[in-house]
Length: 217
Ligand code: E4P
Image (cartoon, rainbow, N blue to C red; front, side):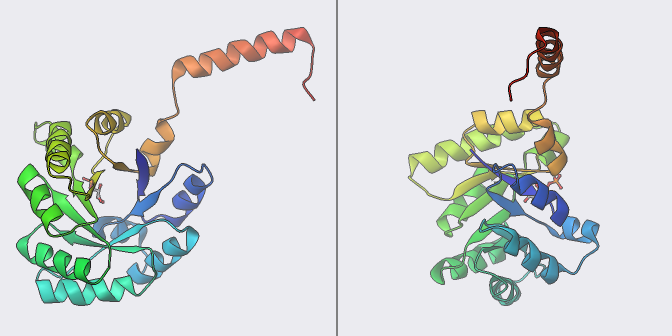
């Protein structure tokens, strides 16, 4: 499974890139607003950090507006992925970008039928939001499982990005459900390696090692 980080904070992205575990970045208008930075400037900076896909979302709601904004964003860097909302206008724009060799991430997906449409429109990625489904007492991971099944039934090559990840357990659920990618907030990525028994084990091993009086180097 590939890991994307869901943030517009450049320092977090730089730090996580050093792990060698990061395969991409997703942003959205809320994350850009939170960063307090100029949208195009921050996208350009993120794109320059590593040759990984960086999703940047359009703000227009009509197809022509999305195409104009998406083309503008795609000119920022070769690794920009144009993020489009899952509406019929967004799907028309998605088909346009597919015809023109520009990668897309169709976002705000909450049903299997929406994901089927995104794949038919030629989306590079589709982003089902599992956390927001869990928020309203539905099972976000079930949606990932359904999309995986449908895409496999018809050999559709759109990649599934499990989005709206809130917990480390969401990452496990997305992986078990067959998601290609999870896009994860930095704080949750940092929790993935943590286990109290690992910490306890290190403490005990270190204590026993020190008692031997030896050194490795
Ligand atoms: C995905 O691309 C979105 O940016 C993100 O995962 C949304 O997460 P949220 O529901 O926590 O806002």
